[in-house]
Structures are given as structure tokens and as C-alpha cells.
Image (cartoon, rainbow over all chains, first blue to last red; front, side):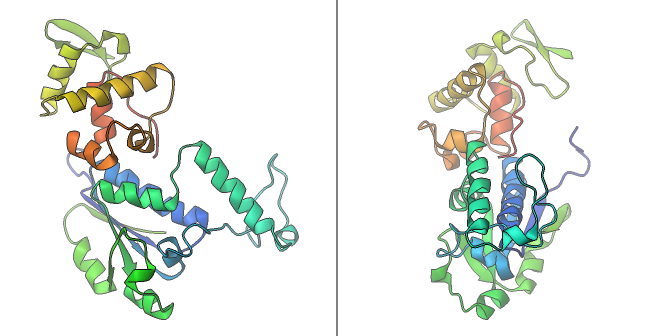
Length: 166
Length: 103
């Protein structure tokens, strides 16, 4: 089924958000590529930096306010007004993480370990790092470097490269 | 469904070359399958193949994470043993179906 004539050779994934669903979507895409033998690099910017910041990576949440796709178990709609009650955001996020754990989806840290073990590379955006006043020491050990957008584009060169924006 | 012949034995495989019947597998067949993927099997390879087959026969889903936690290899070694797409490749050589996991 794989297109042998034009296979994907390289994937650059950019993650600009810091919610559980966005970070995990980007990580699954990145790890999925690595598992298929595709060269993969992931670049975290703006709120995505939370996923690679040591102090924040274990505390990722999902939004319970203004999230029209969120429903309660059983399919009943989840009104935003419930979402502002203190503790609800943390509770829903914990439930989500629990579900993922049952499906053997790794934690963010473990995921990045898997990605780098397979040859994938993880980067942070210099602009965002400067904005949030973060340095290399603040980031996970799995982060290879802090780079600029120019360097990102240089790395993206080659036939069969895809750039994915989350 | 198509068939392929290995060491004189006819094996039922699907279009991508994955075994349709895991019981048709044997270690000798594995050697041939591995050769087709340009791999020479070592003891370490066999340990991983056994692990994969055991998990499959128990009906458990195979994930990269479970391999890393198996205690037989870590993920880096797994990529070294089966370069390219390790989970897919090792499943093919182990005579079990293509892994259906996103992780």
C-alpha cells in the first residue's frame, strides 16, 4: 500500500500549542514517523514550549472552557460554565491522561525518549524561548538545541519532506 | 491472500508479506524472512522475536513502549536490531500480523 515511487523521506513537525491534545498529536505524529523509518524532527514554539520545559511537562492540561468538542462521559454536552469551576480543568485533564495510560501511550518525557532513541530530534524555538525567558537548562535533556526559523527551514530541505503544523 | 515459499514450505501471507497463520512459523523460517530484509539473526534478535510472539499469542497489543519495558532490549537497541521500521519488520520476521498500534 505504501507508495514506493514517492515515499515520505522526512517530516518536520511544529507544535505551537500547550494543551494535552495538541502536544500528544504532535508527539504521536513524530514518533509514528520515526517508527516507519522516516527522518523526523519536532520543533516546539510558543505554548508548545510547555511540553519541553522541565517544570511544565508533567502538568499539561486540556481546556474545559470554550471547548465545544468536549463532552461528558456518556455523550452529554459539557457546558463551559462548568469548566470554570476550580479543579474541573485539572480533573478532566487527569481523566484524559488516565485513559491514555491505559492505552499504553507514554508520558511526554517517555515519548520524547522513544523519539530520540529512534533517531528523531527535538528542538525549541529561539524566538519563543527568548519571549518566555527560557534557556537550554530549563528544557528537557531530550531537546537537542534552540534554533531559529531559518535553521528550521534549512533542516527541512530535501525531496519528500513534509512540514506539519500543530 | 497469497502464498510464499520458504525452505520448501508454503506459507500463507497477505499482500504485504505478513503471515496469515502464526503457527506456520519456525526459527528456520525466521532466518529466511530476516535474510529477505537483509538481517542476520543473532540471539538478541531471537529473544525479541520470542517476546513478540508470546505477546501476540496472548492477545496483547504490541506497542513500542512495551518493547522498551520488556527488559529484553531498550528502544535504541530495538532500532539497531531491526533498522528502518522496527516494529513492522520484527513482526514480519516473527510471523505475526502487522502491528495495529499508533504508538
